[in-house]
Image (cartoon, rainbow, N blue to C red; front, side, top):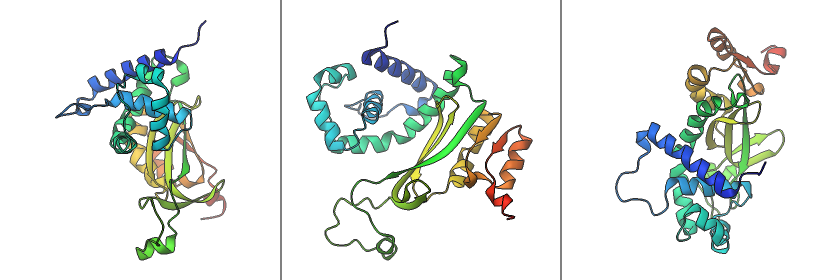
Length: 244
């Protein structure tokens, strides 16, 4: 059996995105049409992350050097790096809704995409550019010669990475690693606060039997509330073991 080509994958994503737009009329863009349509940039964004090419300047250069990929993506011209930066930021809520749309859509295709057992975790990602130390941030002071500073990034500590200045990716996925919900926040936003925002969709739409995660999601009220809805929150519950 032949493996799907890049062109096949692109056509599949475009078809799924068309279904998503039909189901979400609010995604339609009003005014002058975009030079680079949403679905083309979403596929390019996915391709760049698979290839671990994250800098906008490098992505721009990659497109100029790969005419065959540009033709498949339907990009007549190469978007400038500042265009990529601006459009990616605007695409975030659309990408977030697209992931949520695919979750129930995929469940009907294969049992591997079901939502019976889900996992929740936060991953930290370092911001591009120099680090803005907390003392300078609190004073509102940007040291001289600190160029290309990301002033939105915040600090958080990971057991694996230590202190990181950047952002947190909060992913809900199933046993096969298929994403169900995704949310991106600055690093200091707590896991518990993000799960609280996800709760209505998790409980009423996905309705898993269990959600497995770490000790940051342990609050007793949440466990009891979810149990009443038929969901089990599985955590190490170290806080309870220590008597808190």
